[in-house]
Image 1 (cartoon, rainbow, N blue to C red):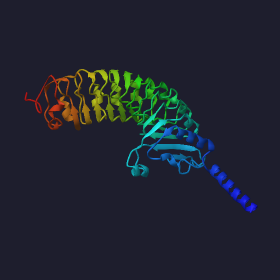
Image 2: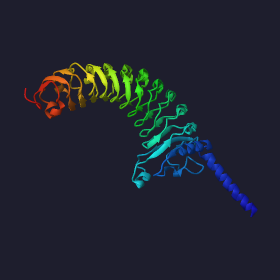
Image 3: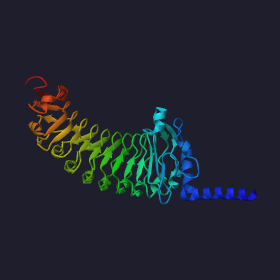
Image 4: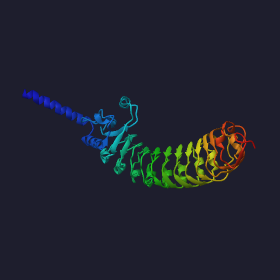
Length: 366
């Protein structure tokens, strides 16, 4: 009986030992449990699976490197098609804060803690010391404080998404050192100060979404050196000065939203002959005439120049554009006859309202 008991204990010991060898390191498990302890998720029970020795096996949202067995990814989304959410018939809600214990996961490649609505506190500064980090996705919470000053140390980072939070402070200059960054989303925060002059060094960047903040100063001309940039949204800020003409010479820029700022000067002609198809310059202080440079290469799903100080006639060359979907020239000081033909024959009067002396269809006859 004693020998059998000894053999049983030995089998249990070997099984536990094997799970530790093939599972995640105890230090990673401890870091995850500390991370969990700082959060409260009362409705879905997503942390109920975070039990046992092996955090690489069946811990919801956790995955590990197959060779080192160290934690590589934490993927927890508050809005998901996962069966847990479908059974609960609701989106997620989580409170608490992001524990600095996350920084003990030395092989962490991605942290997604998105759309939980109630997570507050600051982004742990120590996250800048995680050398393998590629994705930071913290959208849709109540995070406050500043972007870590030395975030530029994360040379592998491809996604930085902290939109829809309460982040304050400025965009750190070190962000220009993120040479692998492809997606930057800082929308809907309270970030102030200038756009860093070195932003042009982000040569891999394809989307830069900085709208609905309190950014000030001018638009750095270095932006035009970001060859892959397709989507630039700087709307709803306090940016001033002229629009750099070099933006219209960017190879793949398709969406340029600069509305709701304090931009002044003229509309660069290059913007109207470029590959930009969604151009919104409304609600600024732009002056002068609309450049009469439209042609077959001009293709606009949206062209919004409303609420500026533009003067003179509507350019006849707009009729030569290959396509103009939505056009809004209202609330300016334009004068003269509205050109006939496309696209003017499908536009409503609201597209031309509140100008000085425009006439012709769809307004009154000249």
